[in-house]
Image (cartoon, rainbow over all chains, first blue to last red; front, side):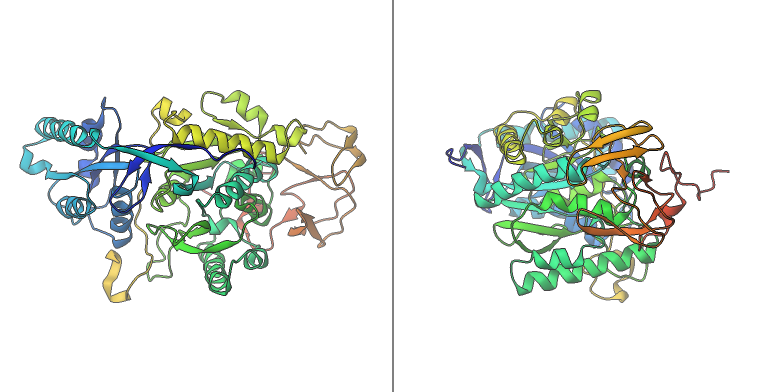
Length: 402
Length: 92
């Protein structure tokens, strides 16, 4: 690229990372507090909600929520619990305050029920919003950006257009000093050698091999590979075929290593996130319950923006980080234009080169980073999914909470 | 394929360019065999093995769940050929 690299203004956090949004995040700590949390955020600008449904806590879910609570796009946090559950809203608020952000918490049982809790929550949110509105903006560029990419509802075009265009964009982001993160190691099945060839160094190669082997053995153990009915209807026939298409989003730059959920990339460049459960006595849950779960994992790496490639079409969005929806299927783009941000279909018909489409996507990402709303944001889509999972389990004696 | 093909003679561009006689409808996003493939032979796309043929596939044939299987994933072979919907889950 010969053009000067774009800059815009962002929000500097105490840890040095910069946000492209400045939201208040409401976090509930059990399903019983979910209604109240959403009612607090209802009708408020820039107030998003996430939460964990379980009453029994889970170390993975706590780590994930703490990473999201201290995400660069988050300015302040309100954590709301019912009062009986294991996960502690007060402790979440403590950790968030230590990160230099204002944070509050309360239990619904102490506040006196639904209406009083909603009123109290709205008061707190108004106060938090006032506090973070004074934040100074700082210059920001691609080198300050982490961008995640997920695909969902893939079809025969995803591997030929949608994902390769993201790959072209990732190459540009990496060359500008930014961080690119993609996951779905369960959609790299059959690509062990290709992955190893992309490793930046020996350490990265070992991490990639281990992540690959775990993903393959996990899929075999649960007897479910990461392909859905829509993938097959869209022309994909095997997981190996889908994997080659999904991997096209990685572009061509070396892979620096593997990070786990709630972990930020350890430096600039291209990274793979391993969101597959570690071997555990419960062998609990599927690796990839839905697209929203994977998107939350990517956001937990600090990604300020997530790209979502969908050949079949999807309507989801995400809290915290804007989701940009890309399709390589022009028919899908036209049919669901209200929901789709970017059509990569021109690459297939020869109307556009891959490089041109990569430049155009870079331009769109820059505009969204500068404050323009992505289509899911305009429509109010903020789907999320935080589940029980077991990663980095210390020992089996820690039981289901680890 | 980046468009729908109807039965008859179809001309393809790209790496497998040429004229093909297509016996059945092949939809956008689906695959067509660019040469005869024998039963149990590897099926190659993107330059890699994406599975094996479960029966002989003639040049110009639609390549999908009825004649191509993953080397790893057993469940996908049970899905409905046209909709991809599962056939092994009991609803009632």
